[in-house]
Image 1 (cartoon, rainbow, N blue to C red):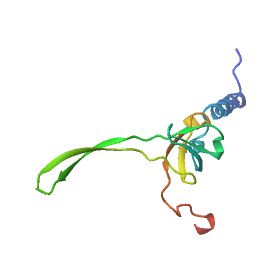
Image 2: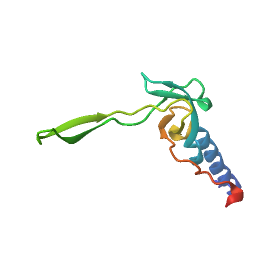
Image 3: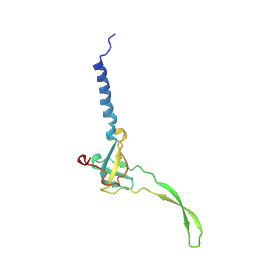
Image 4: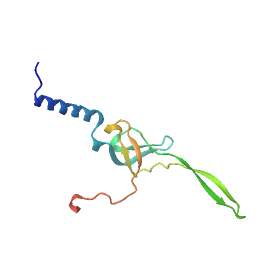
Length: 124
């Protein structure tokens, strides 16, 4: 019975990493950012140039909150309100996650509201 050589053993690992990278991407491929080029408000989807005609669903949750209201006579009543997600506008920059690093099933996680957060290499 012949054993496989160390070179053959390492080539198996390299091949598995190659196939896994093709199927589920690499860690740095999981998130991307981009500017919104189109918004589908009824379906709560948006489009980025990178993904072409593929609609990207907006991942967010509506939530309900209670608040207390005091009228002019001093009576306090509890009221309930529902906050609904407002889709980003064309030109807004959004964060998109790629499911398992692939280009299929992207999901928009939210808008980037911060500015000047990218530091140029020469500034470090």
